Length: 155
Image (cartoon, rainbow, N blue to C red; front, side, top):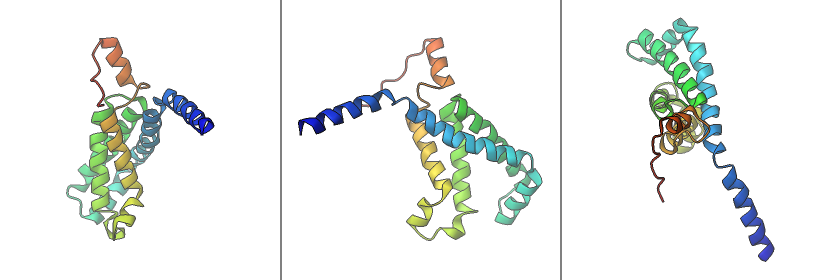
């Protein structure tokens, strides 16, 4: 039993040193996806407008532009960790709208919902909004450079 406790302690020690990687990996995972989809939408606004029209989304041309640039710019913000928590908000709204419009016909219960990529992105975005960008971000660099105090984490 002593050996198991020793291995457990060692594993936890190693994982605690890697703690700062978790927010970075989450930001990169969703940020790169949104940069890519935003780029595609911005460069094919008419196709996105037609899709939004078929979904019954009001002002589809305006919404196509708004969503495309939101995904591109906020995705980039997530990747570099700049204005990270703010960047999650429009992306979460987009994912909620996607679930309520484009994905709604495919969702018949909880398991259908959690199987949607949009739901996964929504959850990761919520985690980033709550936990923050982490140490490897421009936000953290700005906080250090400006001498701002970081809020104390919850116990």
